[in-house]
Length: 219
Image 1 (tube, rainbow, N blue to C red):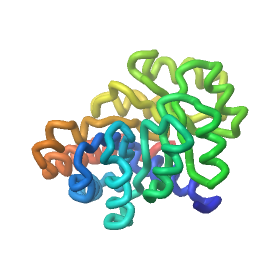
Image 2: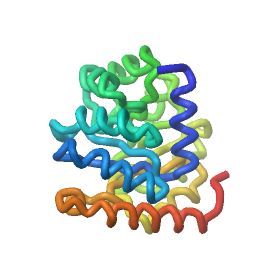
Image 3: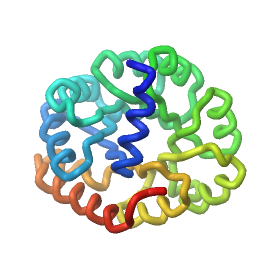
Image 4: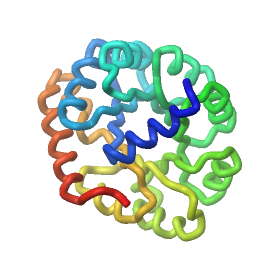
C-alpha cells in the first residue's frame, strides 16, 4: 500500500457515491459480479468476510478486474485484515471500531473505514486520526437524521452509511452534506448471485447510477 491509497479510495467513493456490499458464497462468482458492477458504472465492491469464499473472491477480482476497486468488509480482527491485504484488498471496512484493526491497517497503509453509531465512537475514531467512517447500522440508529444532528458537532467527519439502505434513500443521505457514499446490497441481492443473474446486477447498478446522475455532483 502507498500513502495515496486512502485518497484514491475516498476519491472513488466520492465519484461513485455508492459502495456495493457483496456476500459471495462461491469464489467463481466474483469476477462476473465485478464485471457486472463495472459495466453498470460501479467500479468498486466491498466483499464481506461473512463466508469462507471471501479471500479467494477478493483475490480473483484484484487479479482479473484491475479496473474495479475491491475491498474487504465485515473485518473483525487484525488477522482478517492481514488475510484481506494478502488477497489484494485495497480497503477495509469493519462493522465496529476496533482500535487494533485500525492501527494495523494504518501501519500497512491500508484505508480503513470502521463502523460507528454513537458520539463516543466518533470521538474514538477522531483520536485514531480517522475523518471518514462507516455509519452502521444506519437505518436502525437514526438514518440521515442522525447524521444531520451529529454533523453540526463533528464538522470534520464524513460518513459511509450502511445498513438497511435502499436505492430510493440515497438522495436523502447525500443531502446531509456529510455522506461520501451509501453502502448497500440492493444492486446484488443473494438470490441474484445464487442464480447467476449478473445481468440483473448490471441493470440495477446502471439504474442506480442514472438516478444519482440526475442529482448532480456532490458538493
